[in-house]
Image 1 (cartoon, rainbow, N blue to C red):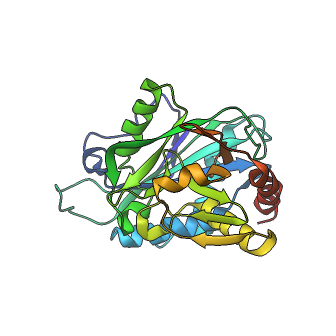
Image 2 (tube, one colour):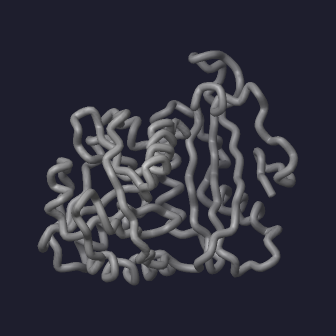
Length: 281
């Protein structure tokens, strides 16, 4: 089931017109949401990130685009699922209305909501081997636009192809200053001794929802010293632990980078706290 501007239709009916500005110019934003136990995990954070991103891209936010309206549209879209306990991955996509070339004829928007089934009701720690390498063919530009969740993901796509061709599980992306910014599918955290760090937004990393949640958890609940600071590739082999965070998988430990192997003790401590926040938020 797909919700296109409030109209529900089955997935086999084409919903994208050839003049779609997201398709033609990458003029679109999206939120990837985890739904389980009758609720959208961290919905308020997702909603306000989307609103802030739309303002940055000069999109007109409709008067009815309240948090309650969009939540009701999401719930209406997934109401066709027979088993209400099945966890879902939901995609909320927003783009500028058709018309114009680089200069749009209108800043008004359209939207679509779709979903697919996923496995686990809560975040589960994947302890399978996960090897990464730096992707150095292309770089993320540091700055505000790189922090937004737009559908301009060519670096992530090419990095994913590179990982597959080289039998890797993921790649770490760099900005133009050769600083480590994020993984292909989420933010990164490094643990070294009693310190835990993640790149700052000014370096170009995604303003991730789980990034925000883990920063508050680390600061408030764990006996670790948190740093939001640029990360050099040389630091990767000094770390005791490294993991990826995203809204669907939660915390994903990296086990190997080149000859360096990592543990997952801090990830294990964080996971139950993250699940508790997801349920009670």
